[in-house]
Length: 582
Picture (tube, rainbow, N blue to C red):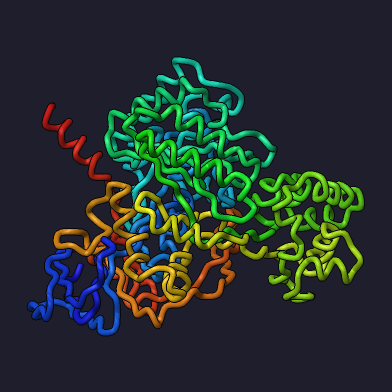
């Protein structure tokens, strides 16, 4: 750790306040002084920030690095894009608590692997699984892993159910003793510094089974919420279905009924949907959200500023299954590329696939929008490359499903087909950014590796919304720094203030860009080789600091991993009070 003076920049402090010229002194990993024309101290490294902005490091508010951080601890490309804190354990998915039963352990791993599009075998080879309780998991992370970003995490409701009920969590409601055990496990996590509990009222798996938390009855929720109320400042994070079966309005009504009168903060991912195909459920969700706020429910919609994209890959993808197309999902499940090719060429499979796309896949799914599916990534270069699936189907006189099967056969089963971003209501997106009670910068970073989710998407706030005049730079910085830090109770970061952690990004707005995606073969496949993911090159930042340590030096990741687990302020205060009482 080197003491440092960042001179000559414009400080944007993360509060939303107007930027101002100032130098920032860093000592022992903290912001020690802010002022004009500060003189260098002996032994201090001086960084010239002339023409640059000096801001808090960016918070990735919704990630799934819970698994991938164990085998990709550099968190590429986050350091080069100014990220200094990542939030783990979202959507009900967390690596702890863990059942003693091997079958239930594997079930939890398979759930994570399927829903987050992450290869299964690396989970088994690279993650130690040397815990049962969440508190033991937190200790294992501190003992076994180091990261270039600070991190904090939720405990997942899915993990609570599987740790308590085993594989029966898929099949039924919990008994009273099982609910009591879940409450004990949640209490352990919150006492150890978990951000709160995350939940999933959205998903079905690759066999069309409802996720275990969709089987939880009101008694289970009431017991878990009662535990959360004992830990003021913790958050209930939940994803509802506004994308597939569109049950989100009903789920929001139920949660509002269960949470009314409780002192619990709730973050609803997708609570105010912004995509055009979601307009049919938007008014009801807006009405319910407004009513719950008026009734005193501390409810915050979560949103993404990046429209979802779908990459149709046969290697590892949940897109087909979550589009209600379980016939093409059979090809994803096929274990070898030879078997995948055999299925694609089989006349009987092709007939079933056509029927699936015509009669079962959701109308808004990639399958039913071939004009928006682009043939961009050929394994062998056979082509055609660059056109749409519709153009290829029309040229060959084929059904769109047959056309995609044929193009992949000719171009190789490692080829991918890319959907254009879903059309999005940009005015509503900006309204959500400016709303003081919303959670932004949601990206799913660390998951969906072959769909290009997450890392680097935060740069769009600058290259699109700021440069287009929809947001000021101060507003954009606030969206992904101070606003998020205060929401999560991470009051030791997120703002440029004396005494805060030196989590800092320095950048020239004219130098950063939303870089084109790259295909990298650096994901272990569990068989001694690698598979691929899409990522983006750095923006780049001139400098990224985490706890006063350089993680990005203007051109490359430094290799430093100074990240620490951040305990929310409320949890730290609770622990201090408990220690004093004892």
